Length: 371
Image (cartoon, rainbow, N blue to C red; front, side, top):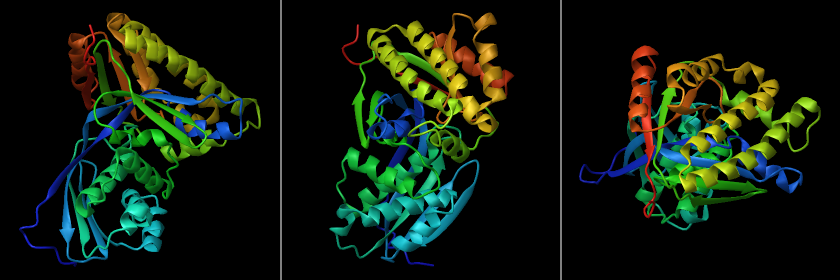
């Protein structure tokens, strides 16, 4: 076992939240194909961060050639020690395990100009002592691990990274793994609020959105499963050009999603929350029609659609404004837009006490200066 530095060495506390994609899932990576297919619309996503996430503390260790990462969560706990060697780290990254995200990100950092410019005489110990974010449920848990790793390296080695550099290194790290995510997931580096991200060719922009009225969400783990790698593999095969009418549906989705997102931005800025709910429901209908035929094994999602049937009618009519899948979609998690705070609490109680699912709330506050 490697030696740690003295007990007096201070721990540095780091927190990285999860991400909720409100609209535009999959258009982040699809938008990169606009450089070869000019008929594709620019990818647009509406995103916010969650209160749930990964809590960690980090510090130096004497062994300058090693990284130690301890992870604790309800799903699993483990401790891993890896050499700070790019070849070895990329090999671990390719295995597609939880530790792959740490290894891939560490490799990307070591290869970066920022890390190469320093002369390190110590290694790093990252203690992810608390995880409140559900893993593999569409809340960008893998990106949160990658961003957490970058932030810890930044804190321990004094790299002086900007938010954009943190996002870029986390993205490059995840790209070393079998998970072919888009750049949207690294928005977990931006902090609180709601943001608009646009993706065209290889470029990505992010701006914070003015929110006229508070938004009340409930997010619930559907206690089922999905395979994000399969979803991304099947849907990405439809680009840059469709090979048949079924694949052409995904191009229809990307272009239609652009227009829905533009309308939703206007509703958020003007405080038209019910109209935002209509946009979210329209986006789900569009996704179901276009994406399910291209990945039926993962996107038929019977648990998600059963939840939609219950909450979009009956006693919830007019109170629940939208019910929609999360992340890559599938039976991972569900997001529910509520009319107000009172409804939010009633929905959370229904989710936890009647459906026996784990859930939590997200409140996006009105922006400063809103009426």
